[in-house]
Figure (cartoon, rainbow, N blue to C red):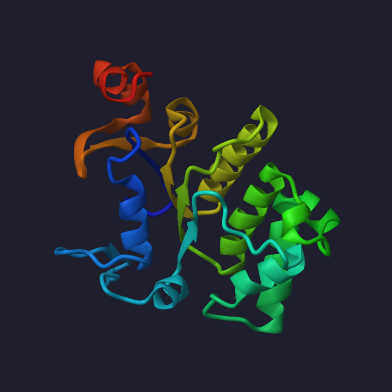
Length: 212
């Protein structure tokens, strides 16, 4: 991946996409090979080390802390930042609320009281608080209403504009290819096709492998 681009990782269920995400963030150790980010090998590093190097994960099913308030969830994101000074804290909160004003309105509400779309906003905002320069997103539009899907897609475009790199795992290939620069198709743990998003939209391989 090149810095500042969004790349889609596509494939049917069970092909290894989430396993790749978990390995990149340090939840799983690779059997062999390396995972490099800005010249640093991430393989076999602990998740908190990887987070402080600038990699963030928006996991499948969001995984926010339901009993904690929106503010507390965001503070936990900040705890993964390399710089946690008061100035950085103010800056990160301002950025998050600029992009997600609804979270400001719900700042003291427990996470469990938020809608699915709002919880996804919170999950994305949490990694933004950490100052992630590479964000791994695992099925961010799953189960969301169309309005929230559009908002998430627009947020990915905005992250790109800010220079953040995004790796997007998404079952909704149309949404993924509408915002990503290019994509890979994974099958049984291997990359079987790579192309620009425009080429993937038109390719018979996409229809064959993904059924879209």
